Length: 329
Image 1 (cartoon, rainbow, N blue to C red):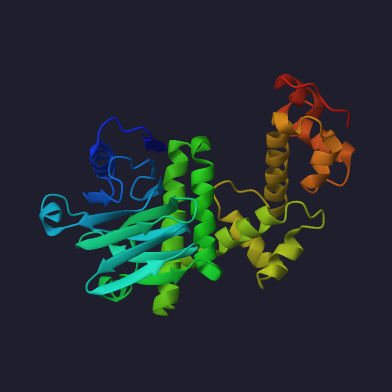
Image 2: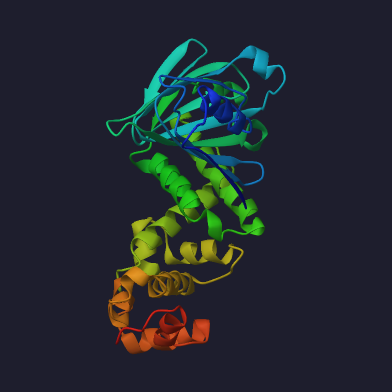
């Protein structure tokens, strides 16, 4: 995983922050940038390189960008972009159509054709958003159909749009923990979710079987992650929530690279959350049994036993080894 962070917080000279921002945006698209206060474009841009796909996170004041023909002649990426607004709004004008995406909304555009973008800060004076860039060749949908989505507002409030939004936010939140091998797998999941969002809005039912399976797995993983604190969480409740049989759920997990059963995967996720909390100095006053219960372990003795099996040390000793005095379980 390669993450590049660009910051422009104290520009030394007028117009320099705009030029720096144009340079930083080169991997996404060569762009002319203009703002209301070009001598003070306080901007942060994070670039997550997943190989064939890239994820960009940006905070900035209000500004305008122009991806024009003269730039495309020298650099014309055959990619599509999906821009998610988290704070403020983003407007895209392309092919004679214009649309604005507010918080938890997305706008789709074609990076290989000219477009005009405008981001507008909210009441805090800042815009925050995420841009996903995917090669056209990676999408199992006809290019002609996808063209109809350009400069279109897509919801990320619920459904598959919310699933993609959550996935992108989690990618950025845990970027430092991924390995190079993870990047390939995460790219495949990201492409599948992007494809599902496009197919939903195009009303396309005939997606590859593997894409459907990847999307279903991601929905199941997200459901489990959101319900780890429920001690009754099990294969039966997960299957019922997704209207599939327990046998089908087991098959989905058997097909994954890690090969864990449903119960083992739930246990692993719970242990990782507990391990993270035990290493957090802000949570050092919390007794170990409280942390364990928070993540679905009803028995402290059972938690201590499987924690030691997984990590080779007791929860109390692990907390102590992280430089914090252990709380009494």
